Length: 197
Image 1 (cartoon, helix red, strand yellow):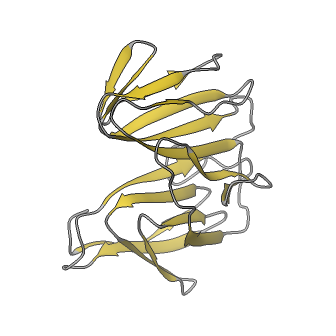
Image 2 (cartoon, helix red, strand yellow; image 1 turned 180 degrees about the vertical axis):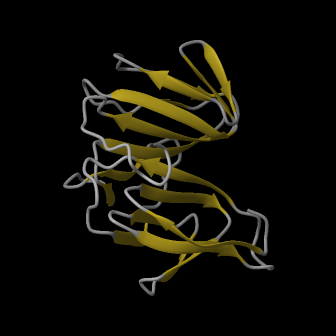
């Protein structure tokens, strides 16, 4: 989003919405009276459940906003809406940082299904093993930079899917910011959300 941009008040239903902001500032307001700022030090999770209204904006003097807004299908329809917002752990260069996971997991934030989410900042030439859980699929996305996995190059905005494999290593071909998801493909999901039907 450019500075001085407004996405006006709008509804979501049955979406788990995660705002990951590695660069810039996103300002969130909602009908529950929450007014929060999400940036590289904070994460926002909106578990919209049976209904949630919110808006997003940047001010004229805010820096340009680059972010991912991640939608997760919940396991059940019309759950109670909640919002989670708060600081995230300091990143450690060349190490995966856990940011959200299923309810009851050790992750600092939660979604209502079997999905884990991590980010990493890799130095040029550094390698890291992708997170994995036996029986779950992995998915990674290059937010910035370039990396190699399995002798395949992945540039900015490219992604890879890892099915039935563990011990997959990625290597940065330049300074790189990437994210990874672990997903239980056998998890129960709903398909009646506002986004991603």
